[in-house]
Length: 115
Length: 111
Image 1 (cartoon, chains in turn purple, red):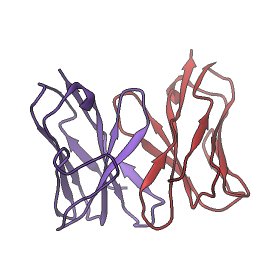
Image 2 (spheres, rainbow over the protein chains, first blue to last red; image 1 turned 120 degrees about the vertical axis):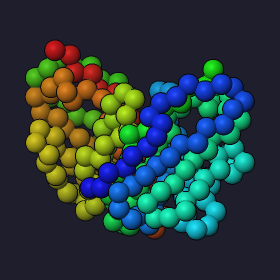
Image 3 (cartoon, each protein chain N blue to C red; image 1 turned 180 degrees about the vertical axis):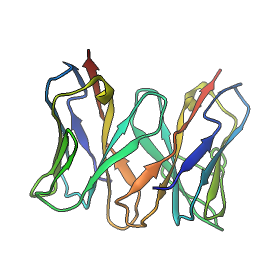
């Protein structure tokens, strides 16, 4: 499988600030996704990052809070805006290399703590 | 949205013991994926099962997909401390490729 790199790997952020997480894949992929994993919880899909168009958000997540960019087939960013302690989570980029929904791989995650 | 139930939620065993964890749904899985996640890291894909009744082996790990494709199990033989982690099952429904995850089984293998 290809390599999925995320940065930052972890950060401590001040309340009210915004942080952008980057996801770089070393091969072109059609489907890229962003997930959130709150402490002690499972993973929840935030949105599907669409190349060249606006991301598709899941219920409970909005573009103003989690703007996403996908300028090409190997790169995406997720911004967590106006952070509060409730946003402290691991944010994960994932890709579907085969485009079948059966082989979805994850980056190593970006662990954000909001103080 | 398909709901996935995993059991047990927590499992603590001694090195060398065998264990089985389960993933169940009230509806049919199109396919099912098992992941292992270590603290502070992203989930690592272990296996994907697609066909009802399918059995896949990965060294000491045996994955089984129920005949009706509504349940799956992961059996670990002779557990090692390196098996410690959160085991997650996930399924993507239909053609949307979006994964729904269970809450996971947190396994601790003690030396």
